[in-house]
Image (cartoon, rainbow, N blue to C red; front, top):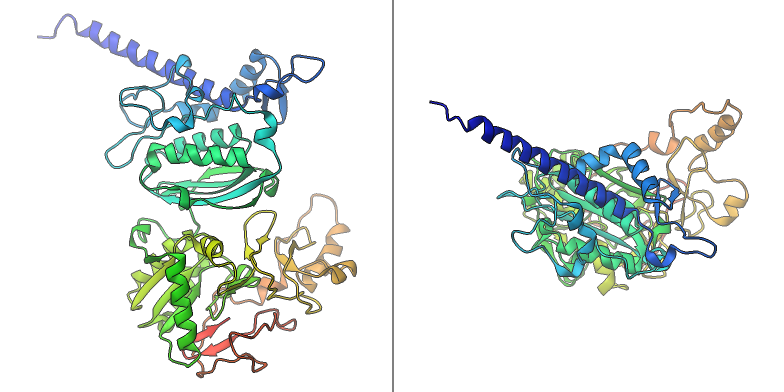
Amino acid sequence: PRSPTAPTSSASCGAALLQHTEHTVTAAFSLFVKAKEVPAAARCPAGGEGVRWRCCRQAFEELSGIHRHVALQHAGDIGLLAAPTDAAPQAGLTAEQAPPEVSPSSGPAPAGRADGLHGHSRSSPEISCTLPDTSHLSYDDLTSKVGEVLLYYCYCEVKDPEKLCAWQKALCQHLHLTGKVRIASEGINGTVGGSKVATNLYIEVMLSQPLFKDILCQEDFKSSAGGAHCFPDLRVGVFKEIVPMGIDPNIVSYKETGIHLSPQEFHREVEQYLSQASQGQSDTILLDCRNFYESKIGHFQGCLAPDIRKFSYFPSYIDENLELFKDKRVLMYCTGGIRCERGSAYLRSKAVCREVYQLKGGIHKYLEEFPDGFYRGKLFVFDDRYAICSNEDIISACRYCGTLWDQYKLCSSQHCQQLVLTCPSCRNKGLTACCHVCQEKALKVTSRASGQTLKEECECTRRRPRVPIEHVSQKTLVCPENHPLLDCKLPECPTHHQHYRIPLSLGTVL
């Protein structure tokens, strides 16, 4: 028979669940508002109490004002932070247990303490939504233009990408960081810029995040001089892949990657490869996994650099050139290492190579140890700087006159997002588009009604094969000017708008 106390028990469970939900939403709301705080040292300008919160380019002095704004404009973000990750309710935050009170140096919360919104499972650790305490820092400390840009990635199983995304967005806003962060069920990939104080705090918090424990380490963060001004804004989102290769991660997983080589090991391998290649005896391919506009301004000597516009074309490039890689040792590299993770896994899945290796930490880490090594030219980066340098070599040329030049600008035609190498002299002549088609189209666009746009139809992309097919050629190791490989500094050919190519028995290389 049914127990007479059953209805009472059900009612109690319902009340407990409702109370838990209310506490969780309250905690998420507090977390979001805390992320919008202006540091105490910057709150009291002369003549008034001063701004205490900033959000959506608005300033708020009263608590009721920021509360009203967040409730009306950011209900969706609050929902992501408050939503439980499992069917059963998880331990949530109360207003008194607000995560900003926890210092990033304190590490993960001790067992049993409700310091974060959890998504814990046997296969995927909890996601801690704590924010660092910045009350001891001034506004200038967090917003100084003298800072750096961080580049990192971490492959791991993420059970609740949306919750990680909401926390990551709140964290970056809290530290006044700008940049781009991609999150997926396979991990996180980010490049963010800010003051040195802010980026150091960001690294500390990321390393204390239980989700990345024992996976992400200090060395995984590549840094370069810059700051928040290097990006136009902050973009954090959830995607299918943390690097857009266009292949389902469940089909080609990062877990099947190639063998990682340290910068020292990779340097020795490249040295040996160049020595053997000069005698026409190499069985190795030094493969650049980046796009053509990246390799155009900087690359490893003797590399094979596919003439592709997007990394999503890389799998097709491998498929169309499988014979090129048959029975070869492949040394792969990219900017920070992430494209090699999936790229090497895809190449290994074809079972044609003898061995597949990749540069751990990418060109970034290699240049830290070998600024005058086998990498020549600049390193392309995906922010407003476009490139950073480690040596004085210029290996590319102005698109119009052929003068040595390697500083990119966006095509001046508004419909086009191509990058163009055009020297100051040519720019002064009005040659600011990536090609003649864009140059003419820019004039037509200015004469059209405002708001009317044209579909990109650029000569640069129209005449370039989407996926080039490499051809086996004669065994020679000289450029068109008969310079030895290691001595040649011949720039981009201004007629064909591409690097000189050095034919080898294994294919064509830069």
